[in-house]
Each structure stands twice: as structure tokens, then as C-alpha cells.
Image (cartoon, rainbow, N blue to C red; front, side, top):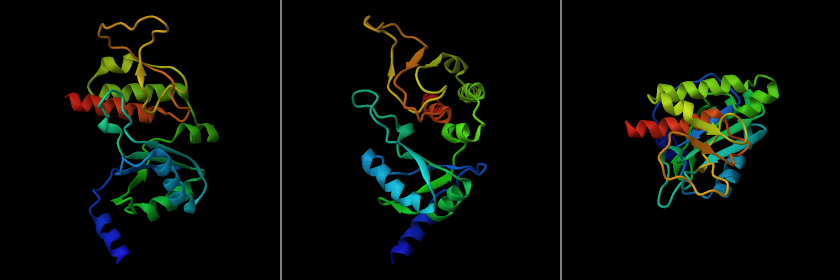
Length: 205
């Protein structure tokens, strides 16, 4: 009975874009109300059955301001495997799996994670930065791509609180096209930053 319900839920999943196979899986349609510690433990338990999981990055749409939650970040996660065969086995086995009441949408990540790229020697920081800039420009806001300044971590970032570079000085109330992101997690990459800003720009059109 349980498998029949799971199959029915899996059938409702919309077709997803196909990306080249790589060791990082992109998950969506996750219940974003689940607490992050529980979510990560559950994903580790689910996906480690298929191979060594190097890292899991969860985005729950944490508040960026009082009463605000960035919808573009809700219910997403990345599972970084040590090997491509493990990622492929996990994708085939867990796509459509009913996870906390929702069928998981699983696909290969659009880009190889920075951690994997650094491990296999293919990481190129300048190329990463160029790709991020291009993605933002393709969203129709060319100026924004030039105004995103990152501090800490790589030249790409996952969602983080956007703060003004103020030190002890009082922050300026004047509007500006420059955003400074501080205290970025070490696992951040440009794919995630681009997704954040492109999604925000899309909602403004």
C-alpha cells in the first residue's frame, strides 16, 4: 500500500531539466518548515545508503528581515557525493521518494560543486565569477551583476544575510546598487548565489 502511494505521488512530479551527470544532486519540493538539523540528518540517512556523502547543503528560506522569507530559497538542498556512481544510484533510487509527506524532486546539479571541483583539480575561481555574472545579466539586470560584492569564502555564495559595509559607522539610508554579503558559509558556491538573485529579479519583472 505504501509503495502504491509513493508511486502515485512520484507520477505527479513535473519533468525536470536534464543536466550532465555529476557527483552533486539538487533536491527540491522539500517541506521547508522542517528544522535544518532534522532535515540534514534525514537526508544523510536517506542518501548515504548509496555511497559516501561528503556534504549536504540545506536551504530553508530563513528570514532576511522581519516577517520576510525569500520564497526562492524554500525547500531546496544539495547532496554532494564522493563519486558519480553513488550520485547516479541515489538519483535513480530516490527520485519521487515521499520525504516528510512530499515526493522528492531529484536531479543532477546544474554545476559541479566547488568542493568536488577543488578535489578533482578542475576548480577555476575566475571562470566561476564569470558564469555568475553572466547568469545575473541573463535575468535582464546587467547592472546588478556588477554590483554584487562578496566577502569571505569563494567568489560565489549561498544565501546569507546581506549587510552594509559599515564597521562602527551608522549605515547610510541612501539607496544603492551595491550589496555586500558577509559571513558566507564555506560551502557556498556561485550557482546558489546566482539562483538567489536571478529568482529575486524574476519576481520583479
